[in-house]
Every structure is written in structure tokens, then in C-alpha cells.
Length: 138
View 1 (spheres, rainbow, N blue to C red):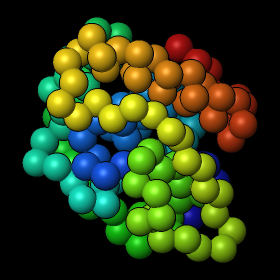
View 2 (cartoon, rainbow, N blue to C red; view 1 turned 90 degrees about the vertical axis):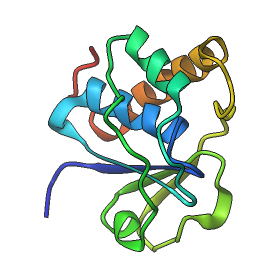
View 3 (tube, helix red, strand yellow; view 1 turned 30 degrees about the vertical axis):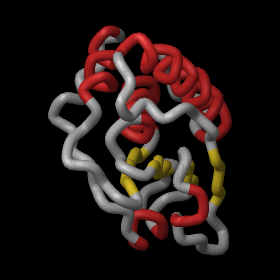
View 4 (cartoon, rainbow, N blue to C red; view 1 turned 45 degrees about the vertical axis):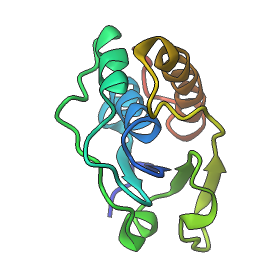
């Protein structure tokens, strides 16, 4: 059992928004927060435009792969953040659930993904301030 807060990011394909959010949280909070991401219907690969957009800010997500959402992933997380998958995330007492409404980067070019990436960063910074206030933003 860890005393670190844990966060699970969930979107449908686990190929764009949730991957970018997990990467931002890992990058900005380091090992101060446990980070997971998953999808209710995972895609075959991470969205290339999301990979390119994150590379522009020095974060490499090219080796990431979409993962299936499991009950265990939810049980093991303190905060579950959904991004467009609504109520497909199982609900357990004592967990904090947030729904971040963000445009879906699927099928978009890097130009359209940049503002999504930047909005995710802002939301992740706010999350860090709440759950791990001592974590240093980079």
C-alpha cells in the first residue's frame, strides 16, 4: 500500500487524452503520484498526433500502448478522471471521480491536438495542487 496519491485517467481508446494526461502528471509530479491510464475500448496504438504534440514539449509517449480499463485499476486509484467515456468507469465508494470534458484528438492533426494538450496540462497542474501540493511543477 502506497501513501502516494494515485490517479487513473480514462478515455474510450486510451490513445490520446488519457495518454497525454498521464504523461503530463508523470512529468510534472514525478514519483510523488502514482499514474495509470486506460480505455473502455482501447485502440491499437497511441494517436500519432498526440505523440507529436507531446514531443513538442519534450515528453516522449511513443512507447506507450493503449490499455484496457479494469476494475482493479479503478480500485487501486484514489482519483479516477474520465474524458469522454461517461459511465463506463466502475464506481466504488471512497473514490473521487472527475469528468474532464475535452475535445477528442482522434483523427485530428497536431495543430488541433496542441490546444487539447495545453488544456490537459492546465488541468493536471490544478490536480497536482490539490492532491500533491509539494510536487514541483517543471
